[in-house]
Image (tube, rainbow, N blue to C red; front, side, top):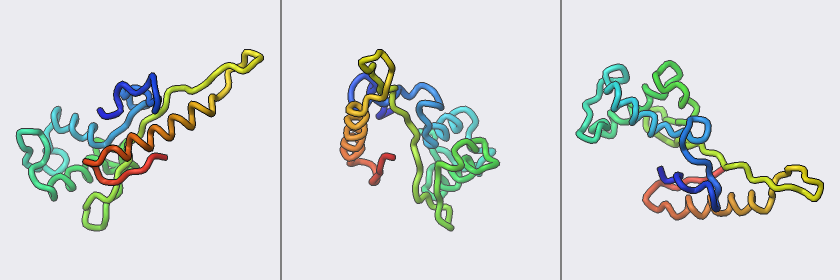
Length: 138
């Protein structure tokens, strides 16, 4: 994952080791296809890389996998398709590590400077991914 090993310095993104810290429909679909094939989600022919062989089969497979009744229902709100089942957008969820500090009284409070630094570094990181379609963090 492009988000691995980024937890100890900006952008301070938590390691992608659980569904709570990292959720990506493409990773979920890939694992599903490796374990189950495509017979329950459109029965597309899979290539040697375990992905559907055509773009239209990929979109159909993804839409069936990530539907509210599909095996990837947890991702249903992470994908957007147009009326022709062409993928318009998808969301990858990740989270930051806790960015806190102690105040003078010893209370744990948010570290606003590190939070701003993390967000700026996240934007820079995403902007550097020139091999992917445009994206924005929120």
